[in-house]
Length: 183
Image 1 (spheres, helix red, strand yellow):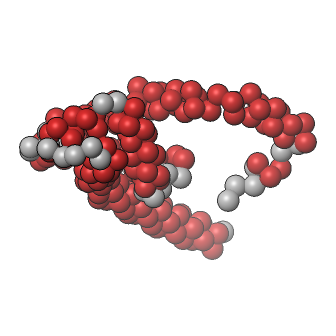
Image 2 (cartoon, rainbow, N blue to C red):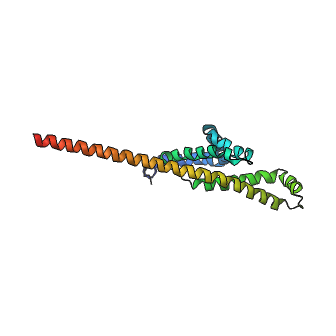
């Protein structure tokens, strides 16, 4: 783990604490802004859920989009130490907020009518949430496959480069040794 944060000065620690006291009361708005910015910077992420819903009858059409999202996240491994496990957190947070939105809407009434069910809105929302879980699992599984492939390709390329670089260095070292013995 990086030691840089452990080595900051006390006044810098105070700055972090004071700035957190400003950020913390607005964390939900800031969180929304963060995701909005992510969606602006990575439009594929913004389109992913909508695209899967729109292609629910033919999921093969969205597989390339999902794979691309996995590759995009593969690049983040080296940049910000992204881990595929973060998608589990994303899934849970998404389901939580989708549930809140559905509970506030009249989807429960519409769902009961659609399935001819009695007035048990919670069980209907639970059922809809299971479906959303399936959709998110589909996306995450597809992203994970391309993510892992991307990470493996990057490792292989890096190892080949290091090996090639090492062999070039061995050649240079041998050439230097020959020059020294010629003197």
